[in-house]
Amino acid sequence: MDVENIKSLQVRVQRELVEGLTPFWQTQVLDYQNGGFIGRMENDRTIDRRAVKGLILNTRLLWTYSALYQFLGEDSLSTLAHRAFNYLVDHFVDPENGGAFWMLDYQGNPVDDKKKIYGQAFFIYALAEYYKIVQEKQLLDLATHFFDMIEGYAFDSKNGGYFEAFERDWDLAEDLRLGAADMNEKKSMNTHLHLLEAYTNLFRVLKHKSLEQKLAEMIKIFTSFIIDPDSFHFRLYFDEEWQPKSNLLSFGHDIEGSWLLYEAAEVLGMNELEIKIKEYSINMANAVLQRGIDRDGGLFYEANASDIVDTDKHWWPQAEAVVGFLNAFEISQDIKFLNAAIKSWNFIEKHIIDKKNGEWFWRVSKERKPYQNAPKVSEWKSPYHNCRACLEILRRTEKILKSQNLE
Image (cartoon, rainbow, N blue to C red; front, side, top):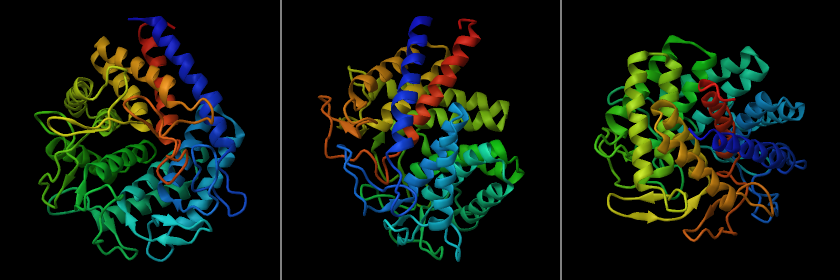
């Protein structure tokens, strides 16, 4: 094992987290005029003060500030976590019907009052992380409320899994899409992946039997329907009865899912399940390594069965690649995964980190040219993928070195 390369990776990731990402999100995104946080910043740091404020950005801010506080211990981070929590509760939570709105205007009024299950999942994910730093029972009560809403309205008792989106009053929505590029189908990999992630984090702090059962069921949904047993890529969209509706592949979700699935099995602590999911995780990471990685170490965005159909390299799949390949190395001890993880970070460092304006570019082309018109902060561009990746890399490399007595 190349100890020096692992230690070098640690140093470089720590530097980016402490000197790059954390100061940016501590200082650049507060909305002093209207409360909470800004909704949009262009790549040149121009702020749109009237931009919409999205549930995903705001829940991911709460998660990130809470996670960073646990790692760095800076009081300003817990203050920001409190600010994010208060804004979410005061403006996003629907006091009449339960759950959380999808989108607000810049003054905090709902402009899209749909209850998208993907968004409800991120509320749970963030609340569980915030609970770790404040230890207040009301947070577990609120997280349980979201769990009950999801299970009461979105769970498909006939076919298993969860429906995508609901109107304000929890009637099933006609337009079920997460975003404009998504298919209007009853079920998706993406929503199930982030429900899995949310329930995993909640189970860490709330050992309820019903939650344990639902998390185990969710893992089975992935192995039964979502993971293609031949290619080990995720299928992306499904009808009510789990018939696949798309042949697209998303390498970023594959590599992210490979470690989130293993994490879920690990947190449940069921040995047989963990052994089974370990094989899936290794196979999924291997599938991404074989088809998704460009020669420069960057991860392509999308493919179909025969071709790469989107050769851009977005910021979040690169971040997830480092974690997913590190996880695959930890559970397989196959050095090719460690090398892939380091190569992925090298790509991020050279081409994704914005050395002029800070934070990371949204995406670069196959020729590694940044898209200057893509925002630096928006309802979809948050600190969750890259800050989480840094925290995971630091935790995992420490564990690898300790296990080899190589610190």
